[in-house]
Structure formats: C-alpha cells, structure tokens
Image (tube, rainbow, N blue to C red; front, top):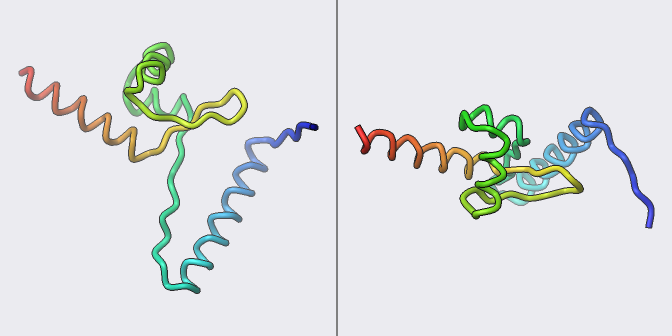
Length: 95
C-alpha cells in the first residue's frame, strides 16, 4: 500500500469540490445539504480557550468526540459549540 501526501491547500480544494458536488446532488434530489464543518486542534483550542494538553485530555476522556486521519485530529463544529455552551452554563451557575 502506498501513501499519498496532500497539502492543506489541495485538501481544501478537494473538500470544496466534494461539498459543491454534494450540494448539487442534494438539490437534484430535493434533500437539504447536511455537511459538517470540521475543525483542527488549533481552532478548537482557540475557541475553547484551552491548551493542547487539555484538548488531549478531552479526547482521552471522551469529553469531546473527534475523528483522526493519519496523525491529525478533527472535531465537528457542533460538538465544539455544544461543549462551549456547557462550559458557559457551568461558569454561570458557579457565580
């Protein structure tokens, strides 16, 4: 089995083409598009205001679901937003 290396720029182009194709298919068959927005480690750390180590702890303990491709982890935006909402509610209840 061989490996194929794709740059971030090429991955973005492929992803955009796939999403565009999915939109066309959904429009043709009358279904609503339901693609998921995926975030990288750095994006998630920034949104949640946490360190990379804390993010790893969240992965290890199942606090935040993730998908892994090669050595990179990706997170669904809706999962991150749900966790952010939970953190916000805990902060409010502790005041």
